[in-house]
Image 1 (cartoon, helix red, strand yellow):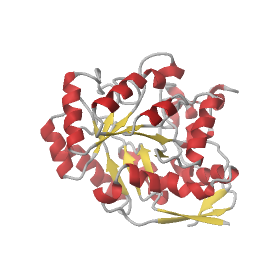
Image 2 (cartoon, rainbow, N blue to C red):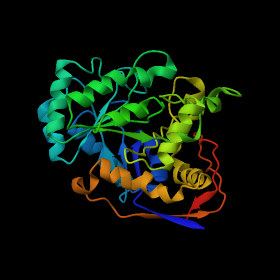
Image 3 (cartoon, rainbow, N blue to C red):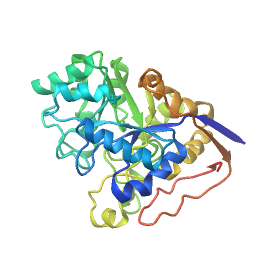
Length: 333
């Protein structure tokens, strides 16, 4: 038994920098033709020049892999810089609420301020897409829900701006998704395959700590059904985010699940178990191409990935740990 996927896309990926970039990039480049690459490095990717340099570093290492680098949105971003970015082919802005997650200290404090409205109005006119880490301060299981009023306001205030609710984790967000024509979402492997019990049920597993955190079985089931049906307003974004073993064990606040080495194998296993393999192509590629209008924005490299039904095991990677999920498929070499 086998399945062939055409041009798989990961619409939310952390590749980090330096030695970590070199270590983790091959796993994504092996399975995906392109990915939306996050800009929250130690020095934020907040200018066109930095985005060009980061994209160049990635493509030198993996020439057949296209990094869709998002710009780190800040209140200091000028309209001229936005226009410059657009001229160079960048079309993604990443909104981090200040101090919400890894390397977000330089994120946005007042998301609905007049200055931010000015920037987002220009982004709307320039046909950018706004990718949002949707969490507000509050009880950890409710932070996505507490961010809903901000998303509501953004969707209404900027009706022609496509907005992506990144790594949707809360069943309550489905109502928001249905309410606004310009709101879409990415779903991670860990949020559709796991819940809070995997993080805390037997012992604290720091390698499954992420933001937003894994939530209840009800939330997991709702998100899983969205993915299995390849709902037209959602697509796959792994939010794979590596941290070294030392950092994970020494700092419980190191948020991120490093899933890149097993993504397609685990997704195929999950979809087959729920009799939904026929929808995997749409979830990992077709929906993203439509939501992000990729065909009119750029020319993607052509890539076919064939997976065969055969049990496999996660690779052993020095200084990194991959989630222990069922893998009943493997990628043909």
